[in-house]
Length: 268
Image 1 (cartoon, rainbow, N blue to C red):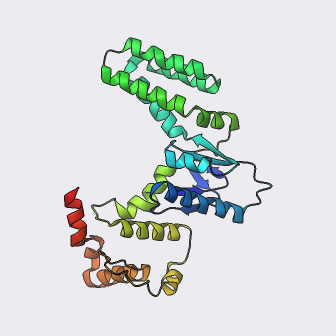
Image 2 (tube, rainbow, N blue to C red; image 1 turned 135 degrees about the vertical axis):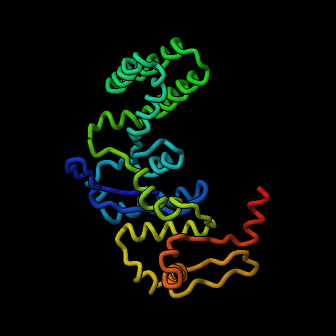
């Protein structure tokens, strides 16, 4: 899931993204990732004057697919989201008890002072006061994560922009998980992709009924295809039929998996 926004409106405890637009679905592999990012950058090109646009900040946890986007546009800059930065720093220091806050403060001072060597030294001090090998590995993991994403952290420090925040987990929960995984469900890859795109289509305030009118029929299945591919029209019609027939029970979804798919799963 990728979302593009211009700014953040701060209204007390409520934060609202300005002109937010979503992208997502099943984009498998390196080529799929590039295709997704290309859709994002095409949208930016069509929506904004790139001569005026100074930078495109790509905020995330540092995963490879996120970094791919930062390398596909001259004005794109990767920014490590603060949630994951804080998470790893807390993970490295939480077991220090009374001295935990001192250790965290030393790491944060190094980050705010843009001193990578000082951050490394602060992490290196911690293993000397712990005995558990498991905790020592957690410290090493946190150190590698922070130092490995140092450039992304420095982008945030230099910008000093409150709008450089990442709320991806909340968006994933609201758009995807609320419909697709909050209750036990089974999805084929094709079905998950279609539902994800429908959820994004709706979140972008597009007209679902207009989509249904447009997609009157799907292309016929290729010879030898092993699973049925349902159109958006068929999916929505099935939902309505279940609602009429089952009433409140329709909210307790039951999904079947084609037998060839069961064989594939059993073979894993």
